[in-house]
Length: 615
Image 1 (cartoon, rainbow, N blue to C red):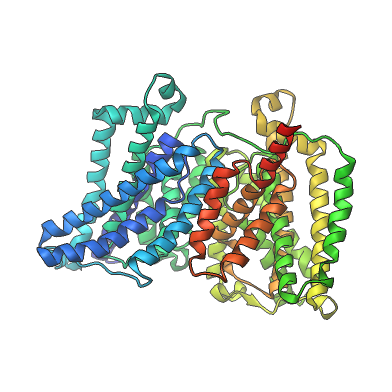
Image 2: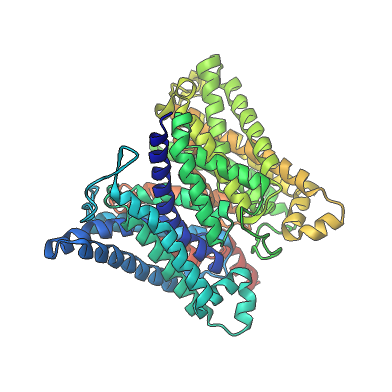
């Protein structure tokens, strides 16, 4: 292969790595100090790009030249930094002591809000920024033309790394940031003003996110899909480098940039999967990333279902509620039955996640992997084997259970955010396979014609089938939670050291939990495939995993009824809000943020606490 071509590819990889590092560095600093998995970091990157693409042309009209361009870039980043301060004061400061999952949910609400706000402020069209004055002409390297602006980007990454290093090593603020990264509680005990420290860190993190977005305007048009596309890569960089490690983030970005530059030449279909494969390999070898350190045991705010007293009322509820729901076809129209079917399916999906998080303390960010495997297993059984629903549905459950066993075998040795990110990597790898293996999965078009047989095809009949299957599955999972296996998972969740001291085999129990949860989510996915008549890669995507987390947390992670109630709330919000207004993301995001602030234990969990306090 031509050496000059390889050199140009390497430079392209360096430019991408530099851009990625600048954005991911902010996320690394914010997590290192506040321990918040800021899902809205990608939205700040998007706002930086939109602001710069709008502001810089106006400054160039006043005075065309490099000074106006770079002033516009820095001003855009500063504006995003101010947004970060507001985000910290108005929202994050109120949830610092909440479990990590609630913080994640709140920042996801911010993502939804900012998506609609950006459309209203900047318009629905993509905006391409101007070229940088003085950098319009390409340069010649080894006989090939290379954009001069890319060289500036290559230099920007090391410059930012050096400035952040000086800030962390030579200033009091930097020393406090490093101290908080190592032991936040000790910093508080020494009398440091944590509120001011966190606000300053959020400003710095948001500034870097805005700077990363603003620097992109001569390369890519600002668009509303930038937030979710960049946040996944930022998470990978942060985790691979080691949570809170800036040098680790720089090294991880360099590796990812070169993998993307040369991976597309060797394996053209590897573009979506190579980043997450890297994270999976690194975490399999170094469970805390390249430069990370083991998490402090007990510092994860693990919460979940506690021991429950047996009650005859709960047994009656298992009979009464399904019987009442079975009467729905007598009064509901076809649309309401469709909504009810989806609520039942997603209730089972969320409850399978409850087994992992609420019982086992195993936070999964990629639970859509099992839901999608179940759906694709059933659809592939229909398409390639000609199997009827009675055979295809168990095939989907089997495929999801195998997926749960395989993924569980890799992730049970991890903990905390590293375990969560490993599950996200697994889901993204499966998403890439479904998206790019067109010959088998149909690629982006998916698989169609996945319908139930005629005798169960009517909407009311399929609703009753879904109700029966979901009720049976939820009942079995509940019995499992109250069994010795469920108590062993809770013991491991609350204290690993004590659980091991009494002879529990933690990894085996957690592996079994992943297998069972995978099979349960796969059952929900199979039912969903037959209710919709098709499957597509979105069932394996990040939004589907976020939906499961949102349903679980809205209902309450500490209660058995939380997941089904959360599924009903989220689905009802979408069905009521979306048809009423084009601002449905704004209202849904505000609803999620409000629920996190007002009902920090979830709706059912908060009601249960009020009832206990009154008793």
